[in-house]
Amino acid sequence: MKTISPNTRFRFFELCEQARDAGLGDAQCAELNQLAGKHPELLDQLAESLFYDAQLRQDGRLVADFQAEIGPMVPKARYPVFFYLLAAAACAMFGFWGFQSYRKPAVNLNPAIATLVKAKGCKWAASSLPTVENSRVSAGTYELVEGLATLRFDSGAEVVLEAPATLELIDAMSCRLVRGTLVSDVPPSAIGFTVETLKARVVDFGTRFGVSAGADGEYMVQVLSGKVEVEDHTESSLHKLSAGENMDRGMLSQKRNPQAAPAEPNRWRPDRIVNDGDGWQLLSTGFGAGKDAYVDTGNSTKNYGADAYFRVKRTTIQKHLNRKGYLGFDLRGLAKNGFTDAELVLSIEPSELGFATLVPDSKFMVYGLTAETGDDWSETSINALNAPAHDAAAMDLHLPVAAETILLGEFAIDQGVTRGSCRVGGQALVDFLNTDTNGIVTLIICRETDETAKGGLVHAFATKENGGNSPPVLRFKVGK
Image 1 (cartoon, helix red, strand yellow):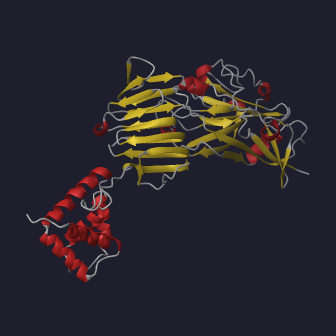
Image 2 (cartoon, rainbow, N blue to C red; image 1 turned 120 degrees about the vertical axis):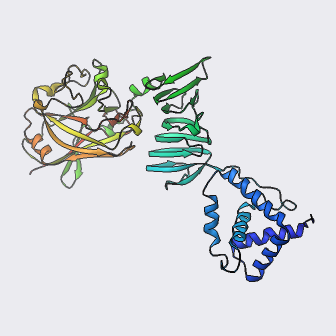
């Protein structure tokens, strides 16, 4: 075999690079064809480089991308198309393999390992991760501030990241959940896929499972189907979990008992009625005898009046875990029968309790308590046993007693949304306020949408104890 001179090898790849960047003239195309025909081993090197490129990128669309670039190079009728495909491959590989006598191989140190197959309302922090579906994603750490992001690793494993969360992509078979929540679906091709946290390692055996983790190391693993193996770094034995089982290391109890942020009375808890312009006034649950809380059928005797947010959930899978919110507004001092317009405004909070993937776009109902004897409920003692318009024996535990309430309106929250505000207004709310006789009105917030599997998200809304977000607010206009 005749030895190829360094100059000849360099010229061959130089022509390939020109073909990709600027196209070739007739003379250059003839020269490239001549070199390929005279030195067929160059074609072998091209084929080898294409093989290595495919391994590095792990992207089956590589050849299609090359073919898309070939079209405008030269007229297809004049030169064999496979030469242009090889030329494009060589150009694409120039940085990976290159010309051995003159350049050292340059390797892509951060190849793509996954594809963003779905992005629903995504917002990323300190990251350039694209939100366009089917974008390729490289190894690295990504922080999801809002929404749901579905990543399909090249191994076939699929991970749904739920905001707020921080995830480190390691390789096609592993990732690290720094904080937040994810749900993983692992097909047979990816058995052994691993999710790590600060203190644990979860290995899949062909299943669907969820993981929640805190930056402090606390975590919870819940198996939705199949089996997983959990290695806790602080324990000597392995834990094998099957469908329906979970392993909680402080995460669940932490989320069930949120700590209130430092209060900011002048900003978030106005102790007066605020002028909002154009005739509108604002009245929060922090005004006068206002109050806010929620009841939990799973903890029927527990009071949640001091929590930073009230939680709402409907579940027919675990009926003992239904929740609904109670709001009290102090209308004393306002003109009776004087409301001309009104709306309720709630601030959405990320409760991080349950999996958003298991709850679709959700509808919420707002009811008014018509049995005014129940308006005297106390924020510091209300629970699922003494709450007004609540029947512990009812079939629909997520709803209030129909005979004691009236439906005032509804609102919706898209799947994965953890920030923003919700508003409910209309004539029904105005009429309800105008029929009040004792100066205190009670509103009850319920979720109509059920979870699709055990462990679905519990929605949360800021209360007057929340130092970082606005409490429930009643906006209204009164007649002159």
